[in-house]
Length: 228
Image (cartoon, rainbow, N blue to C red):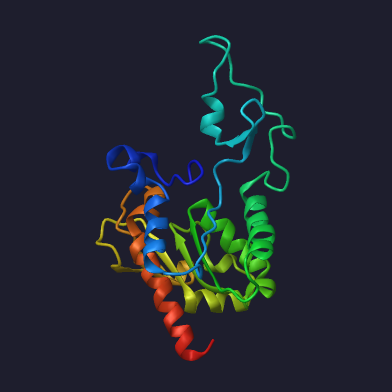
């Protein structure tokens, strides 16, 4: 996530705002349901700096691009306390906040949760679930990791490793057509497929979103049939 709701500015420039942002994803979800049974929480992994002058969270790139007194002035000083959001000081802290305050606090207790993480976000989500699987194993239905940066050997919770092997899927950077099976199960602990994106992690969600949503639908259908 580059800015809130923005997956890839390069796709916004090359194609459209809708394609490079979460707009198409939200539209797809809205078109697939006729009630309020599905909700969407978008984490804000990139905007972890608090810009007091603008009263908003910004990315590091935006912080570096803020107006300066002169063309040769250095960047604005980044205060480790004043320019951080409490409980969201890092990607790790933000992931914890999203799960423990947003999901646990706002989502119905009987709702199942599907999780998507990309790059660093995928790494932090996987490690968080590994550390806190006893709290979430009854609610998480499926996990998708885009260009994961963690390996199966790093997970310490055996139950989470078993879950990931059965209900997890990784979409890797690859020039192969989307959904082409790829090697990597031993490395990442789950089945691996081509995302259809060869170069840029931030482009995986816009390119592979239909495949990701179909996978979630498949897991949901299988869970309903098994009564689990």
